[in-house]
Length: 250
Image: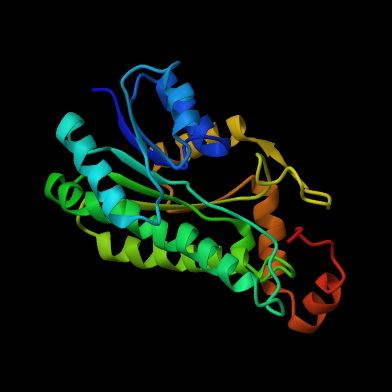
């Protein structure tokens, strides 16, 4: 039986690459994104694809999309919470408060909104995989990227909680923390991005991780080593190392 895969943030970047990868496997797709024109352009080149123009922050819209997909195709095998946004933020600027809210609402609450409508069906079927795209940015607080780091740290912890909640119920929860990916999100980063990968490379790696049901993975493996080193650096050393590091533009 072909896989049934739902992907948020599917209009560009990693989400688009994931859609194309799974389409190449003959999967039935449910693609969600805010930009309907890009979704339609993507779907025009794919088969067995249902598209939903919706913002993951809009819980009723995401619930409606999930119900429509299940009515058409049944319970999905894989639900990938990929939608995410990133901007430079500084707490000292009052106007950045709204940016904080948008980033946290999209990157954390959006993940909850996507998974929630599918839980009952997956538990009843005792099968399925929830996949959350977090980031190595969630390992430590990055200066100038406080909202993004906080959102990804929250996503990692949320996914772990959900994984434990689903234990013994036939439903897997998989956390994936990519490093840098060539996407519109990284285009304007004014700093060196080590071990950067194309979205297509990461999509293929994500699919293999999901197939093997690995509960937690950092991509690529080199970045996993860097992330662990940074995680265990003493604060006094980390602070001095990153205080003057280049920052994502506000």
